[in-house]
Image (tube, rainbow, N blue to C red; front, side, top):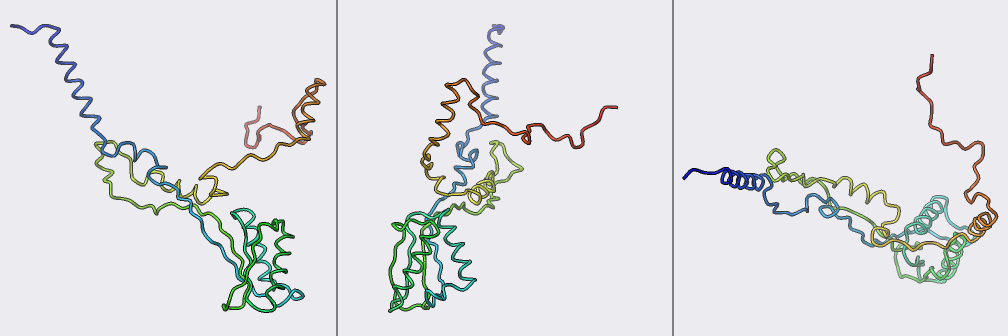
Length: 227
């Protein structure tokens, strides 16, 4: 019995399927290695920030170095803080004076009074302590060189793929809380909305007007000049 062309076609099809299966061998790790966000997740955890400064009285205030550190601490709280900021003064007759001084200074920096917690503490170095809870984004250290990149029959990428990028994102994110959930939208500009609506009703352009100094042209530095 001689083989027909149909038999040859069936055998060729079977060999093609087997060849394709050998090239795309099963991936034991699924798509894990193809997604850096899964391989190297960014962890967002709360962290407690503290500052201790000396205080000798309302009249003397803070030393210049302490005042600079205080202002930087408050600015960081306004940008990255979550919840209240606390003031803890050493127990004694001057505790209320210290609390009132720092409370007023925080309020003058724009912190709502309902976000300022006050209290006293025993012992210590006699300094006033301020604290707040912030959030910190971090990624596990890179450096997994366990995979043999010269032998990749499964077509797998390096375990380190995307690790450095994830570290950069964690270091550069303005507010780590945005990685947990998006912040709520702020209120709209009612005055601008009314202006745009009035221009629309009267047939005027609704976009902002551009001054003569504004230009969208690209730079011509290094451009070839016509002879």
